Length: 242
Image 1 (cartoon, rainbow, N blue to C red):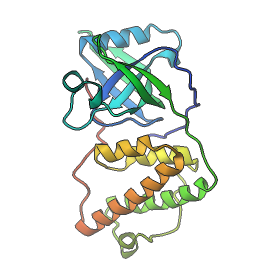
Image 2 (spheres, rainbow, N blue to C red):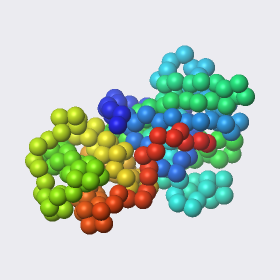
Image 3 (cartoon, rainbow, N blue to C red):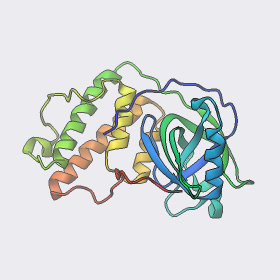
Image 4 (cartoon, one colour):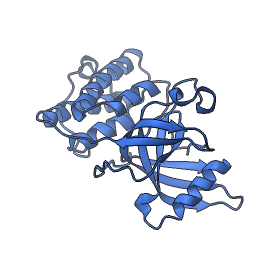
């Protein structure tokens, strides 16, 4: 699993943000490879790569509601909370397509969407992640719940895992920062798109951690009860395509 690191918050919106709709949300800190073949997105990549400042090579990843399409259904097809991502690597293929690697940076809320051009472009406000008193303790609880979830995925289903008690030893590889942990769990747990989106859209780190703890307990119990991992696979390493 790739390490998720916090990104400094910045509320300034320098210009409208081009949107790249996907079927599943991206979380800040996660590495996302993309295969770009549509002409409109090729043009976007070319324009962004011309920016001398790498941090300015930013566009928005936003999740589509199930069964909906922006061109057919308009802005309501998009969830209102997305994640900006920055191009870190790019390889131009001989036929003009691109393979790019991006990193999620910061969440945003869509205020308005312009669909008049080839790309959906949004006016957004960026959202700040904060830590409140008590979040450190909640992080410990989530880390332990995540450890039990991973043990269940690995076939280590014991009575303790089934009951939700489990060992109290913490995984030294997990981040201790509540914000980073909340996003790591959001990215790592196998969930339906709407539930992952709900974690992304949580208004505070505490709300995200609380929801994550509840989902981890539920998913661990389901794995223990049925002896199988969920059928939904949102952790594939295959690059999404536009």
